[in-house]
Amino acid sequence: MPTLRQLDYLVALADTGHFGRAASQAGVSQPTLSQQVKALEQRLGVTLIERRGRGALLTPAGRDIAERARMVVVAVGDIRDFAVRAEGRLAGTLRFGVTPTLGPYLLPAVVAQLHRDAPDLKLFMQDGIPDEQLQALTRGQLDLLLGPLPLDAPGVVVEPLFREPLRLVVPADHVLAAGADIRELAEQQVLSLDRRHHYHRQAEALCAEYGMRLIRGYEGTSLDSLQQMTASGLGLSILPELYLRSEAGGRSGTEVPDIKGWSAFRSIGLAWREGAALTDAFRAVGERISARARTLLA
Image 1 (cartoon, one colour):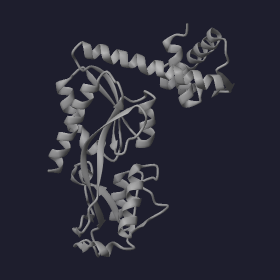
Image 2 (cartoon, rainbow, N blue to C red):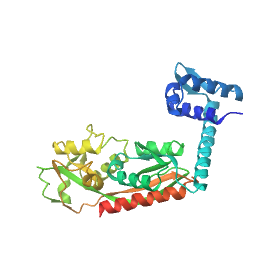
Image 3 (cartoon, rainbow, N blue to C red):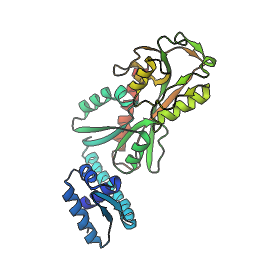
Image 4 (cartoon, one colour):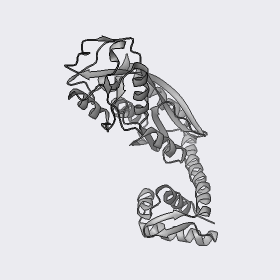
């Protein structure tokens, strides 16, 4: 019978399409991974991989078997989590995905509190694009995902946590810096993040709603880059309240004007796989995140 480790290696190859990257993901040497996948093929009596140098293209049979292997690997992980839960303690390593437009400005205090309350719990924090991380969650590569709603995928539980105001930010010397009416926003140029971000799509929708124009070709890579480009006079930006209030973020060189009629926010939620053994613990983590956000936004 195939071993769990062999199935894990096959899943890594399916995710990366490359022997070297798959070995790195699995934490083994490339020869070890290659030998074990070859042994899996011999045990099953079917070719799973088309080998192209260090590249790896799954055969049709390989794709089908890899998806079934993924379900086995995820289920075994849930069994381990269930055993920890039955022991009555929150322990082990949680792979925690978070959008970079939120994590640094909200989570430090939450993580510190979790460490005090559950010292055997380790958090492997991973910043990333929410849509890509949602896919990683369903594949078992993440255990939790904190990000902007919607977080829709089959087999995923989503717990809404809080709503965060979004503020229009202008250069300090801009005509709107002292305040304005919503009608004065027409034709103003607005910066945004890379279009893969949910944040980009929301900025695009707000521009359409208020008659502003989204600047193409100058997408930022972070909230800091948006803030700095705005301070330089390149355009306006829409930044989340937690970023503006945090020590890691800020508003140097910019102003957050009072815009009569402006009302924008984003909803933040926590997601995990349906049936996860640590569901109660995940909800408790969500409650702590929500409480911290409410405190910061008060």
